[in-house]
Image 1: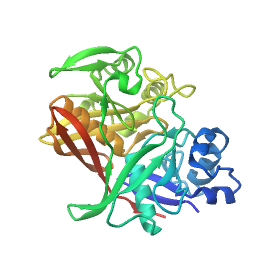
Image 2 (image 1 turned 90 degrees about the vertical axis):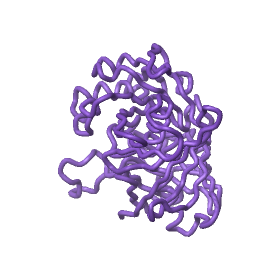
Image 3 (image 1 turned 180 degrees about the vertical axis):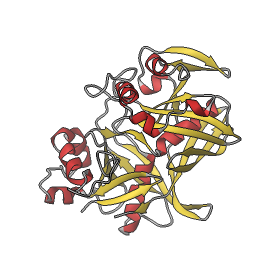
Image 4 (image 1 turned 45 degrees about the horizontal axis):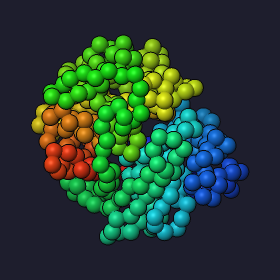
Length: 330
């Protein structure tokens, strides 16, 4: 039976593969095989687990009752394999909030080690990055809040890190950023972006003023939604430009000190209240242009504030970690 969890307004359903099979959805019993055959089962799983029951959909709700589906674990002891299924049936390479939720679900089932790190392995079908992607997770407290630190490793920067094509360089604060013409054509203030890979691909657009941050309702308006979908989604839903496999979009504004305000439009999902890897990419981009220094950075999103830990060595980011917390909601 699928369980619903919330991490800073980002909602995922969690379901074991054997439960899907009991419901007649033929998910292979190996995560690696399930990833490569996702076209045969993923949309059926989304329909079964992430659709509102008849008569229960709230007014003004999203098309689905969650932002995606976490299928796993495929084992009864660590390391744990899982798949992150977007509501369009595609697979994500990583999701910070998704992995936080999955960690909480494992903890609720008594499967997560209490005093040591645990390895989570996300399987996917993307050709430009290795599968599975591994994330080390450990239970922790921050500001008296129980949650998990996710070690997301070393970020990559630039068009080559996300397989972006046809973008031009633009200088900013002594760094070369990217000019993504489809974004700039939607809003001239969206003219400088930092590509970053934190397990999955991100395009962080840096803006100077709060008015240049798009609101979630604004991003759902047809004209802007269609334009952002063409950029963020791979074909055939989008245009796959500048990234053939699609790209997660963020907008960031430096508030003050170690705080950055962000908005998110996810590949495969659209506007979201929060996203863990998006917050991490925003913090990394803010560090790279000198807005923040290494150490703890707070990324403020509509769904909540994400603490990010940036570790620097010899002028490079060597490691980035995300603190996440989640709760069961039914």
